Image 1 (spheres, one colour):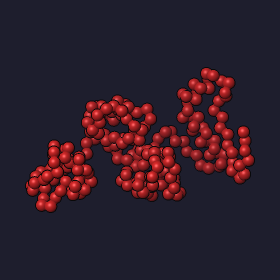
Image 2 (cartoon, rainbow, N blue to C red):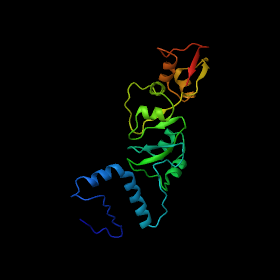
Image 3 (tube, rainbow, N blue to C red):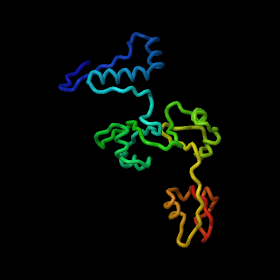
Length: 205
């Protein structure tokens, strides 16, 4: 059914036929990236705008993707990935600060982290990054092999520092100073309480 859309162009994309019970289904399942790319290319040509093939790659080697959820803003996402609003807008060719829930954004990530994508497993991630599954689980404190799309995994241990407790220090103030958490410090140092003693040596990640 076609409707009068006024000045808005209506574009119909046809992927197959209802009376095809085998071929079109298999073709769509096995070649969906090519079909999607062809649609983007065709629409770009129709609208007379520049087209560059994506090849399923991020704009840069040290970027990942993040799916926008309800309540997200460019500022909150930038803070989460330790970057700037302008950098996220640049990576995604955004001209406004408006976001749509469910949108996949390119975000800068460190070279020692990995963003889980559809189809990833701990084994495939470990193999592609020259690490063992057990080590990957240990670094990320994983207790199972279950992953979620968009999950951020560390591929290397963070830098370890040693800190000597001073008068007035608390676990909270130390955690805040090193951009970590109280629970992380307690786990690294096998602490069972929040009590500290002056000149106590702490391992800080």
